[in-house]
Length: 298
Ligand SMILES: [Zn+2]
Ligand SMILES: [Zn+2]
Image 1 (cartoon, rainbow, N blue to C red):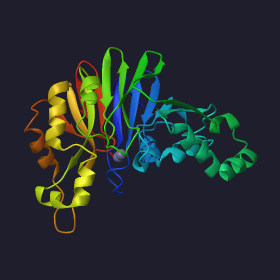
Image 2: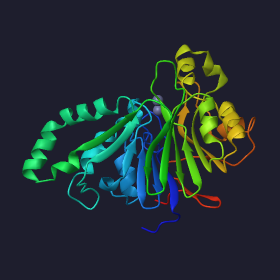
Image 3: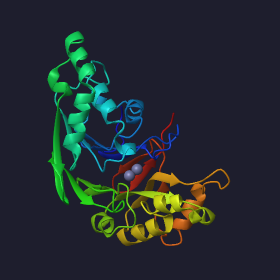
């Protein structure tokens, strides 16, 4: 596969728990130099990697932002499918997983849950046991969590709600450039702190018509996320070369339709006038002197 840049961020899944076919669960691929980092593995992450011809078994590390299932339900698939003997799998060394406190329990319980599959494939397919092992690193505060071959990843805590902890965003630095992934968060000063000077800032967003805001359950959901005009305030203070939306929480009910993407842009424009892109699945951002947006061609 031809590489467009030595530093590319690709949105694999720009959705939420809603099982839409066009917006898969949260997952973002970062390619920096010869390394491939996956941030979250929501529903369908393996399918998106396969569409990009990225071998699932050859990821350098998986980073987890938080433990909501829309960010983790694809992990067993990435882990076990990446182990299969195939052109897309064939992992022969332990899968490296880095996440806030909770990553070790998650991965060890997954190993328990899939013990029969692992036992069968070891015996029947003679797959290497090291390839299904995991190497898990946990952290519990802001700081560098990965450093290898000129790629540095810094975790920073964000605010996804009082009961949704831990939750972290990531700043990835390579060759003097940087990309920041907000994770799920409401308006948060730490995103501004770690997002400052970033080339690319990928932020979550939630949008809802005012008449639906009367509903208590809608208020609860919105309270865990950021509205476009507040995301605009984050972008205006961080001034990235490009701001992009992912994890589009588009709320509606039987009578009230969701806001459109144009509405989201218009609402963001109330507080931010810089470069802005609404993400879609498999949209890539090549980070060079400038940032090139490359929608996927099916
Ligand atoms: Zn989420
Ligand atoms: Zn979440």
